[in-house]
Every structure is written in structure tokens, then in C-alpha cells.
Amino acid sequence: MRHKITPGILSGLIGAMVTGFVGMAIKAFGLVDRIYIDLAKVIIMSKAKTGIAATMVGWAAHLLIGSILGMAVCYFISVTSRKFWILKGWGIGISSWLFLLALGTIFRLPLFGDLPPKAAVSLFIGGTLWGLINIFVLRKITNDFQTINNSKSVGSKKIIKSRVLLLDRSTRLNKEKENIRLIKPKKLT
Image (cartoon, rainbow, N blue to C red; front, side, top):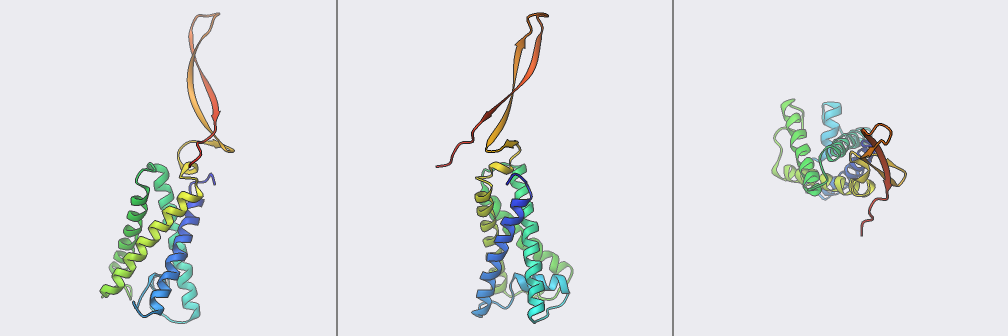
């Protein structure tokens, strides 16, 4: 994948799916009373509703939010370096947890106010899980972030531009000529 946005959408979507299924499992066991899907339902419908249609709307909103945040992670990694990539993924995951809960509280949406400690901890773990899964999937599908960095690639080869000074014999002037050479990317062991 050579795009900077598409891998982020895919990795965010996979992270949101895993987080959604884990959240549904811990809610089914009765450990918490609200999960990200419930919060996504409230963001879209402004009220906590039950039923299959409401759950489908919650899933759709949850996956959309995960994909949008995945794009942000992908863009962030492409603009910065790939150093500390685990920390960046985790940091964006918990930042999104804080940001989404803060927005819900500011706009006084139901389920966001008076959050019990168990639900807050499970949502924090969900944000952590999403961030780590997102960054691991992004790293895997972009070949260790090679395809989203700022260099251009042709096929499986990377273009490296270098400048070479050449001496023109007829005018005895130095001229700069661009020399493009193709090299193969290093294989990871």
C-alpha cells in the first residue's frame, strides 16, 4: 500500500473490531455496564437506546470512529519518525479515550456523566488495546512503515535522489545534474 491514509483506515478498523468484540465479551460477563459501542450509540442517537438496530448503529459509529482515528495515527507516523512506534500507538489510543470521554462530558451526553470506576478502567483498557492493535497492524501492512514515510517508491524499489557535480568540457563550468539510482529495500530478518 503506497497511500498514507488507506493503511490507517484499515488498521483503525481492525483495532475497533477487536476492541468492540472484547468490550461485548466483558459486558456479557457482567463486568461493566457500558462499552465503546454504547458510547458510540449515544454519540449518534443522543440517547441510550436498546435493540438490534441501535446496536448496529453503535457498531457502525464505533468502526467509523476507529477508522478516522486510524487515519490520524497513520498520518502522525508518516510525518514523524517510526521511532518509539509502540509508545506513539499507545499514546494515541489513551489520548483518544480521554478526548472522547471529555467531549461526551462537555456536551452532557447520557452514559458519559457519572462514569463508574469499572467502566472507566475498562474503557481505558479498550483505548490501550485499540492503540496497540492499530499500530501493530499498521506496521505489518506498511512493511515496517516503509510505504508511508516521505520517500517515493517505484514497484519494490525505492528512489534515492542524489546530486553529482559534472564538469562540462566545452565551457569548463560546473553544472549540477540529478542522478537517480534505484536500490532494493533492506529485508527484515
